Length: 429
Ligand SMILES: O=C(O)C1=C[C@@H](OP(=O)(O)O)[C@@H](O)[C@H](O)C1
Ligand SMILES: C=C(OP(=O)(O)O)C(=O)O
Image (tube, rainbow, N blue to C red; front, top):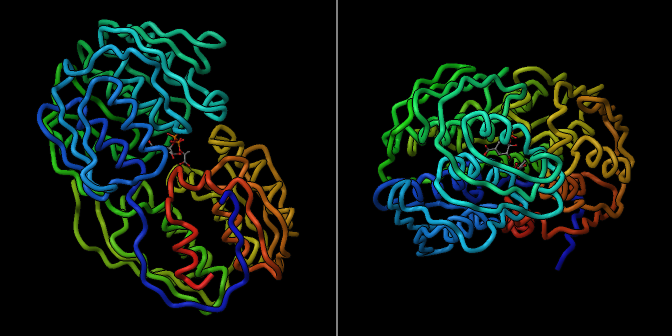
């Protein structure tokens, strides 16, 4: 069914797990595909985006076996194991798939055609196409290569020093993957630190790189060796579950085995700033990634101002943060988040439109949102706009509404969080 109905809830105390991290699952498959030897990914996210990554690399000739829905075996034959695909590469809804894969294709000596769904067709590709061309790849596409469909002919690459205008892990990762195939050194600088899963996982696969905040350098001509990758729970998915507890005063929820990479945990810092109690129990590292259990509860929330370097550390959590802010005392200001406009939807616009349907007082700004709270939300009919995070955020809003909230186009949620509705039900929603 393509709708979710979410109703007001009684307080709950629960301990749950969430599906595997999307960013790490993509990278496990891609790095396994270019590595020598077998890579086993356990705790893989069987969401639509990561399945698109598997489908693309199968088309590139890589043998990928799904032992179970969450265990994937990738039989890598190194860079040279990739073959010219006879069919176009369909990335579906996934920005991570297309941008990282372009970095790999840029250095392969063959032709490929890459495209995805209507949302992907609106997302900016110039931010990776320009520097890849500078390195020596031949890429063409709609509007001079700014948008899909893209046609790629890999070239002999030369390392560059690229200063990215945006803090984007997709741009950084794309250029590092191209840099591994290039002559000389590739350096990527970014204005704030974006998620560093690529740096951590490449090192685990035997790559030598230099990483410091805001700058990563990699020498070309390096090969990867297949690894065992155990994927932690996705902190971005857990954010919806913790938010559920914050929307229903008196609730407490523990998410077990969740990724705690500091480049991803901005949302926990913000929950603390809002007055929530956040208990972190570290459990060690999985494939270079810190993991632990995190329990969240609150007894009254206050408004916050969120911007600057914090934004890349919680970029995907902003729609649900806006939902939680409707229940906080005071005016919440989210700024420096213009990147939200180029996600699956313009998330500044879609969050505002959908929250207003439930009676929230929200203003859209050029680079963020202003939310006036607390508001008693009302029931209504919302739409995901085909954006998984918007669909889930509105279902969470329903937990604090006076009446039922219906979310249309809810299948989009499978992009990152298969089983979301069932898990909410398990919490008693
Ligand atoms: O590298 C990644 O896995 C991701 C990076 C972020 O995008 P940007 O690099 O465009 O900021 C994030 O929004 C996306 O969900 C996943
Ligand atoms: C922006 C997202 O993903 P992607 O860029 O991979 O489509 C997301 O998951 O919120």
